[in-house]
Structure formats: structure tokens, C-alpha cells
Image 1 (cartoon, rainbow, N blue to C red):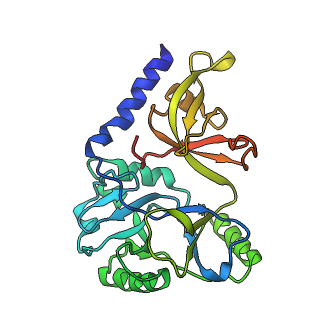
Image 2 (cartoon, one colour):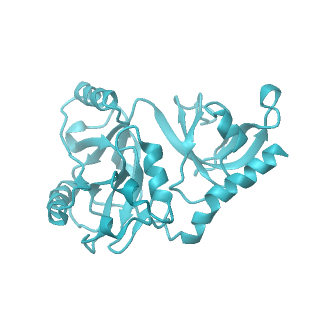
Length: 282
């Protein structure tokens, strides 16, 4: 009964946002960095740990297509061309960013702490180098302190890339993003965009709640999840007592960390729950 109540509470938390859902925006998505990448072909920037934001020229949306109810002043004067970036509250403040973005009635004080870190112009016809140059001009034209350009730089070796990652992580950052210089903006997942972090992570959809045993009796024991590719497995590690009392709703998306995959089954090794992805549609 306790688990059933928890499930109902989870639905109450996540389902209302569906009323405001729109079609997911056409975003370029990242693959995981691999060692045979030719680094000279890429620009590198910090991976901001926030909520992916897409401005379609009229409204601000999350990666999952939910409309973001930002204060009018936050988006005032933005261009009618699409902007791609991260709604960011600062390093180590992911939960704060999510809480602010998900509010139906915007908290003005909370939004004063937010930034829109821009890293691409989806409608621009040029390659990334050309898009980034134009993006810097767009940010300057907007002229708002909370709208910033994600600084891009070059690295010449894997050792230099790892050193850059170490600096960002020591400052509380999540990782790095690599943009292929010659790539056009394509709404798909490819090596034109790569993420580089100390650990691997991915998303999966919750399809079941498995009851706990022993000290977890009456609570959630593990989440049964399914990836976008149809791979099913369980997530039991990484769940807090609060997660077990009030588990992520069925149909919601979660992020998990892992250390490689099983060569035969493809199932992530040592997978552990990280957090709920409230910016993705159930």
C-alpha cells in the first residue's frame, strides 16, 4: 500500500506538466567521446549541468517539448530565430535549475539566478565555426547579462583535453562538449557532437516498480527501465530512501551512471540511478 501511495504521489508531481507539452524541438544530440576522435576537427566547451533550452523564436522549451514559463523580462528582445543552449543556475546547482524551470508560475527571484548559456544557432546554414561566430554577434545584440555565449576553445592532444576536463571538474563542473568544426546543425545524434565526462551516463524510461525486500520491505526495491533502443534492465543502486518512498513515476525518464557495457548483452555495467530527467516528456 505504501508503494502504491508513493506511485500516485509521483504521478501528481510529474503528470501536470504534460498539459503544457508541445512537440519536442529538433535538437542535435551528443554521442559519448571516444579515443579515436581527431581532436583538431573539434571545438571544446564546458558541459553546463542544467536544463537544455530551445528558443524557437517565440517560446522557450525544454528538450522534451515542455514550454518553459520564464518571466517576460527574461526573454524580452530575443530574436525570432532559434537558439540552442542550457538553462543554468551555476556549477553544482542542477536541482535549483530544474526547480526553477519547471514552475508554472515563474519565481522572479529564482530566475534572477538563471543564465541561458548559448552554444548553437539551429537555423543557421553554415558549419559550426560559422554558426559560433554569428552566435557571438547575436548574444552581443541581445545584450542581457543572463544570456551568455558558451566559450569555445581548441585542444591539440588527448592529454590537453583531459587536463581541461580536470580543471572544469575541480571547479564543480560536469564535463566537456566537443563540436565538430565542419558540421551542419542536424537534429539527430551523431559524432558531430560529443560529451566527455569522468563517467558515462544515459537516459532510460521507467517501466516498472519492483518491491523491496528486507530493510526495503514496503518500499521500492529497484526500477525496471527501458532505453530508447529497447534494452531493459534494473536500477537498484543509487536510490535514496526518499526515492524508495516516492519513486519516479512510471513513464518518466531517469539518468543513470554506468561503467561500460556487457559485450554479450549490451546491458550497462554497475548501473546506478542518478536523477529524474524532468525535462524529458513521459
